[in-house]
Image (cartoon, rainbow, N blue to C red; front, side, top):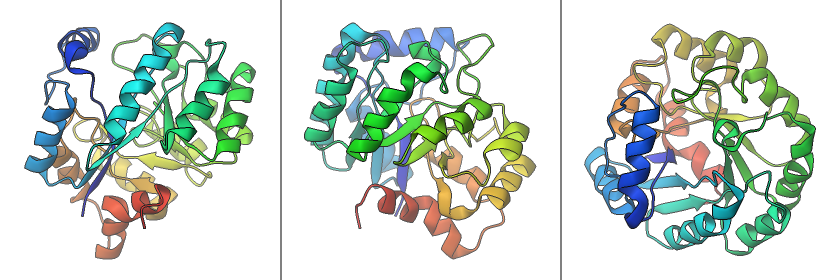
Length: 264
């Protein structure tokens, strides 16, 4: 069993344009799908993924409702669990969270770089408290972003500060933060949040990955790829080099995610 906790897909009419812009902005990253849900499903079948969490992101307030409408549509697909998104500057962000919950989605994705806020900005407190009230999972992009220059808005210190406003599960993507290994060890490991392991292959040095695993523990790690930018098979290659018992490997591959998503 394999659950990929970090993937992306776009509406068919927008996929090519969205993927092209994101690839260009990130320095020419080569996508591993064409950005559509059908292409993601093909990659899942090829790499042995049983279920993917597909993360929507509202990059501006005007598109928020349409982004979530497509998440609702994806969530009805077999093998897919879709997360919605709210934009901090949307006047109806709290009501949109209620709509996300009512539609049966399990969580929301927030991207402080794309959405222009610091993860520990006090203005986000009402949104975080509403997320907690509704019992939704929050997945943050964490650390650096290849399409943006510093300062970055979701570094380990920002995420640690933001945790005080949450009573529902929080996931920091990319091993707790792309390019932030030492800071993750010093500031986030041991805190009450999960890390997804997406975009670690060829970006996270094996000794640092092992150190984070040892410090944070296998019970709060979630397998992820960041498809279309990385393949699940690549991330498995990194995971399979780490010192893990068979039981702990299964926790990371799917058991932790199944419990968090209440699939068991």
